[in-house]
Length: 222
Image 1 (tube, rainbow, N blue to C red):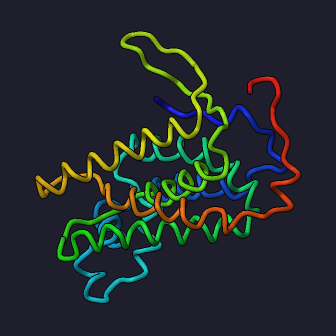
Image 2: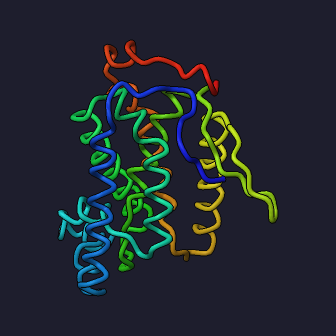
């Protein structure tokens, strides 16, 4: 399932911060391609270094790095599917703070899980997981326009946010168990879980009640 966006709600303003974040991620990825592996390693989170108190700035920089085209494409699709509504609920200033703090908490969750690892960690997944956590507690009943793959058939359908995001989170928990048992794996699932939990717990605290009250439902699709 690939989420395409919220079909139940009209935005009260353009998602400027969400679009800006996507643009920054794309630009940084293009810099990565030009600069090579040394650039990526320099600005990624290495848990052992963070645990020792070194290179703390990478907690911020790593959330704008990606390992491949598929990595950045998948993350940006999820950010654009869930980010605009949460930005609309919080307002641009609160949303950028929420996104960055959620991403930092996600990175630190991964560091705490394996503090002596020397494998670089990178990606926006943890920050986006925080956005998804905020979405499921803010708009659990909204319908998400979703690209559904059924074997060789592809169709666009509508899935409740609580079901789609809940299923996604369940898969992260399962994968955390698998990685923990194998002591290996290329995906920082603990960062996903840490970011998501942060979003669920603190997402509503960032909401702007006046902006929420001004939102209207999309009666065409809900």
